[in-house]
Length: 286
Image (spheres, rainbow, N blue to C red):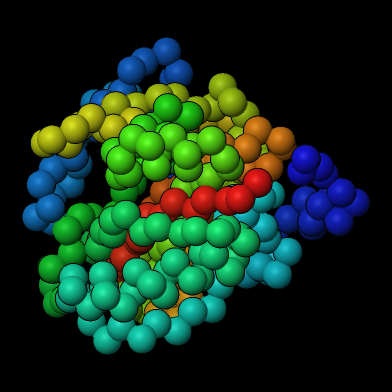
């Protein structure tokens, strides 16, 4: 069972690090049923139904405590990773070379016995250049990619029934690997919510409607206890691992909400953010 230790308390006591204050887009209230309609992969924005409100929040510099971060505590982790992929807009190269890199990276970080990549998405916030090839814009809604229901359902979507049930009988987690395609990132950086500061009632189920299926994720209502972090000026040799779900209910991080945001310190003329996120399932023996 994962428990708070004196080291963890020390980490939380020292989270007051320099950062920025910026408005973050929360779900306005919990007693609604928001829906997101995902657009085709043509660079468009998703369509959101629901009421949202910006709250000014302190977003702390995670680099100051990067060595103390843990997927099982905060739910996210910054790693150095030099990829061998020359062109992240080449889907064949991403699948042939980057997927195996990501599987090794997640296995090393988690101790999982098996890691399976199941999709990837490129994002850019406009401005021309290679970013025009990106499928989607950055998500400016605080969200968590999977829910208690949708993570197991996605495993069942990806594997045949006997294998899926065998995998679901043991602990598994869903982990995203997010990295810049071009660095440093100075526009639309990623803000990450410390999983330890999320209360269960903060999470609101949201239907995610695709052309061929309906998924489910969480949006988040405001809580003044939320602890937000980001990693300024992320380079193309860095990646963030984000835990979107953990089947374990022993006290470790299970959901890690996140969002892009407008950094008030972004210099005029900063290039658009270009990023790629790869979604994985990590399966464990115990």
